[in-house]
Every structure is written in C-alpha cells, then in structure tokens.
Image (cartoon, rainbow, N blue to C red; front, side, top):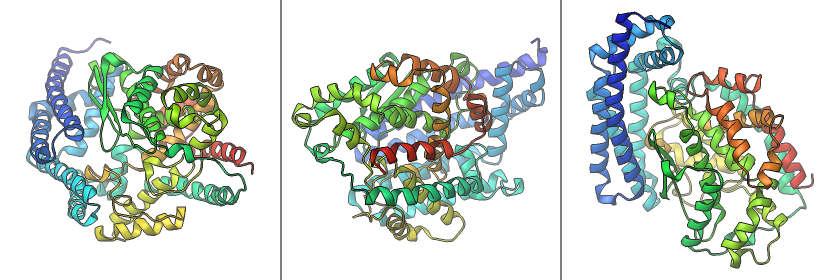
Length: 506
C-alpha cells in the first residue's frame, strides 16, 4: 500500500523512537530477571531503583510531544497503513489514552512503589508475616487507583477494578467473570464433594520421597528439550517464584523452583513456564519489527502455559511418555510405582492452600478466591488488613483447608507487588485452551503424538492457529477465529467433569 511522504516520515519517527525505547526496556528486563534470581537481598532495593530508572527513560521517549503527535497522526490515518503498521498505530493509541495524564515523574514514582513492594513481599514472605507487606499492598492498591483515575476510566463507564482487569485481559469485565466463575462454582463444588467422598483412593506417598536438586535439574532440562524449547534463545535457572521473562527478541528465560520432598512441582512449573517461553520464542519476526509483541493478553499467555502444563502434561498419553524418564532420573522414588499409579498421583484431587502446587481440578478455586478478594478490596468492602482473614475464610469455604501461616496464605503469590487484576487470567486461560484443544483434536492426532513425545505437530498447530494472530486481534476476535465460537467456560468444565469422574470412578 503506497503511503504519503508525511505518513512515511511519521512512521519512521515512531519506529526509530520505539527502537531506542526497546533498548532501555531490554536493560530493565535483564535487571528484573537478576533481581528475582541471584541479586543479594541487601541489593534488591537499589537494583529496583536502577530498573525503574531504565524503564522511565523508555517512558520519557514515548511522552515526547513529537512522538505523541506522530503516533496520533498514524492512528488518524490508520486506514492508509499496511496491516501491521495499522495494528501498531492502534496499540499505541490505546496506550496513549491510558497514559496521557501520567508524566515520566509519576511513572517513575509508580515504578518505585512496585519495586519497594517486591522487597517488602520478599521480607514478609521470609518472616511469614503479612504485616510487613501490608503497607505495600495498600500503596500498590492506591497507586492502581491513581493510575485509573488519571486515565479517566470512570468517564468511559469502567469501574476501577474493571479498568485493571482490562490491562491484563482486554475487554474482560467483572460482570463477565462473575458469570463464568458462578458457572464454575455451580458445577465444580458438587463434583468436588463427590470426589472427596469417593471410595477410590489414589496413592501419592512416593511423590514426597526426597530427591536431589541435581536430579531435578536433569529432569526439567530434559523436559524443556522435549518441548522444543530453543536453548539458543533461552536460559534457565531457579527462583523463589517460577516465572518467564521475555528479555528481548532472541532471549526468553525461564525459572523453576526445586522442592526436595515434592519432585512433581518442578516438573509441572517447568512445563508451565516452558509453554510461556514457546509462545514468546515462536512469535513472528514481523511482529517484533513492528513493535506489536505486547498485543497479546495475559489470558492468551496463560492459556498456552496451562495447555502444556495440564492438557498435555497431565494426560495419560504424556505420562506414558514421561514415566520411563522419571524412573531413570528418580530410581529410588519410582522403584515400586507403576505407570498407572504415577498418572493417578499427578492428577489426584487434594485440596491444599498453595496455588502453585494445586491439582488441576481445585486450581480454579484458588483463582476465584483471589478474584473475590481483589474485587472486594476495590469495591471498599474489605480493607488491606482484612485480607489474611478473608483469605483463610474463603479457603475454608471453598476447599476446606486453612493456611498454616501467612507464607502459605496471603504471602504466597508475588503478583500483588506489581498491581491487581492479573489472577483471573489464569482461569480465563484454562477456558480458552479447553476451547482450542477441542478444535486441535479435529486436526491433529494429539494422543498419538504425545505418547511418542513428538511435540512437532502440536507446536506447529499452536504456532499457526494460536500464536500467529495473538498480537493482532482482541481476545474476543482471537478465540472466535481459532475455534469459530464465542468465549465460554463450558468446554473446560466438561473436560474436568469427564476426566475426574473417570479417575474417581464416579
């Protein structure tokens, strides 16, 4: 498509500016990865300050009047642009509307709030004392409110919390989540009661036998290789809370955490983070060239990570492939364990207080609990100080368990150090992947491929159908294009009912 000289000049200014901003963000991302992995505790706050400085330098660039004028000009003339340039212009306009009243000075102050919160969360978690973290929770919540106020979300008809949800999952509202989670509770609570009363008992003793970190490292590195994780574009280490960091175009790093008496945790957190990494590593290069790689939502991302972790990783077919390797790496653990016992054990329904160690069935309740607490906090129904009590009450209500400490309770997750509204994307991701897994099965012999440890046909389908347009479409358009259907939690609930009814012989 031919464009005018003026449009060409504006495009060049915008892309040249974004290229420089990307370099600052890349540096900030490296510092973030370091902070969460090997940074000494006394150096964390200073590290956070440097990280905030680098991010703010990037932010200053996109707040320059010349850049804003050029970007808005592109948006006004988006009908004259090629597809990827049009998408870039639309994304920049969306971010401009959110940030137009947030100065670089304010942005820097906000970054320091989040970095201080990370330090206080780390201290509070170490001491298992929520009171250490509570002031930071209040500061982060107040910062989120201030950010939403500055963007004028109320004038657009959004509540503060809906505006925060939209940051992570574009178009998602609390009304939609209330309906979806209401359906989940309606169908899953009675089923959980039946499962817990089932005479079928699943053996799990061997899951808690001691293992060495070296064994776990060997296991998870092998897993990533089987998944086709690109080691030339990736790195791997450990952290307190497993995560994936897309540092740059050719640099996607992941972490896991080793528990000496619960070896499945590292296996499944690694598969989960490996799913995130595959999504990042397989982005079309043209998306990087046009600076649109932030178009995908966290619901999209979590759909992929939890697809690999659960729909693939906990399937009978994958356990058939995985079992011999587990026996090889952990011979003292698996000597008296059959393949069937291993499959049942990694799918056992066992309500417990830790989200990252939750079974596939009860995991949704962990997300509902956090969502209900977040929503109540922003609606003014509870205070920051009420969170631990609310947390414990809801765990008792939904799962029949109570955390033994703050570390097991309101301090177990890192997410509130950087803001509110993220948690629902885990459940939304499950809803998405159940929908596109049903579509994939019509086109790929999934079980056969997994039994052989052949990820190629699965990854290829994901690249072509799930990854390719994630940066280019809204979530609503994206899931409709993949599946031909509108968003629904019912595919996921159907899957859980079928799988766990069979597992527990209901």
